[in-house]
Amino acid sequence: MSHFFDRAFLKVSMPVNHLHHLHRPIFVAATRQHVGKTSVSLALASGLKKRFDRIGFIKPVGQQHLIVQSQEDGTDVRVDKDVKLVREHFDLSHLDYKHMSPVIIPPGYTRDYIDGKVSRHDQLRSIHSAFNAQSQVSSMMLLEGTGHIGVGSCVNANNAQVAAMVGADMVLVANGGLGSAFDDLDLNYNMCRSNGVRIAGVVINKVHHDKIDQTRKYMSALLKNNWGVPLLGVVPDKPFLGCPALADLERLFNTELLSGHEHRMRHYNVDGINLVTTSLGRFLENLRVKPTRTMYVTHVTRNDIVLGFLAEHQRRMAEGRSFESALVLCGRKGRYDLFPEIKDMIESLNAPVLHVAESTYKAMESMQFFTPKLNIDDTSRVDQAVSHYEPHIDFELLLHRTSKARSR
Image (tube, rainbow, N blue to C red):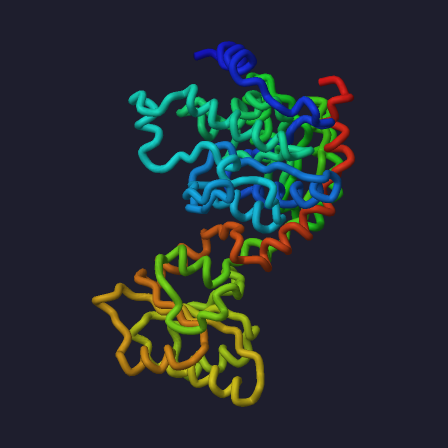
């Protein structure tokens, strides 16, 4: 069906209920994966919550979902993981989960849609029903997209189409750089414009500290000269936000810590991971000169390294000194297993030890290329993301751009 039919159908059958709002809804989307869209959404939610009585939040189309309970009727509801994060972190108790994540796309959904088992109009109605329900109890609406602008096109619910449905203005998020960032932005900008979606502005993320002023100057000029769109913010890179916690590694490798469970939310810099292939003596020297929060990776058959690690942990604890290192043991379970006595020793202590059913090379590679995601359990990372991003976003300019008093 054409975009014209979509808009005509929606206008007649499902009017959007935000007429009493002073600002158009804000829709956040990115140019690609892993560029900080959720971090920007969290920062916007924080800033908007300080400026409006009640904000609404919707992830119209989600993929990775959780099961939660509706406070209206106690029924189980599937919601995107970011929905739970935003609702709980900002205490948006006026919003029911039933109206926060209207469309979930699990494996097989696309095939069902193409086969006609999923109704397109029912899908659109779900989004509009959720949006209208929230609009009635909120004075400002914030929506977070999924991936880049085109994600969801195969089920006729990409970010630009959904933003057009609800009359939202778009905030585009891209990673640092000039030429490459603008090239990515241009593709997404054109899809927004083809769907009649207005761009409120752009946020450039993960910019090297020595490139902040240069990025602000030249990206502002590119956006203004080409589109007449402002730069809403330039966010400096903050490596900590990309450092996985041990809990992230549990999820990555589908395993659990053998010990040190209370340290699951301790973060480690993957660029500083040490692969241990040396002698025990050299390892102990390394352990004593490296920063206390260092992650070591070795094969599960290196009993000498395991015992040395545990002994150093006990020694530091006895001396009242900090010991925050973690040990990742690699090797396929069933083929390479810990001796029961050593496993018992590990479990009797509180040093973080993880057994991964991968080769050391594969485990190292997986951790190096892993991008941890924000989640409600990791309050430290969420708090730091909000406090880092929020000051770099020009909220007054954003609200001016989305004001209904201003001509579209």
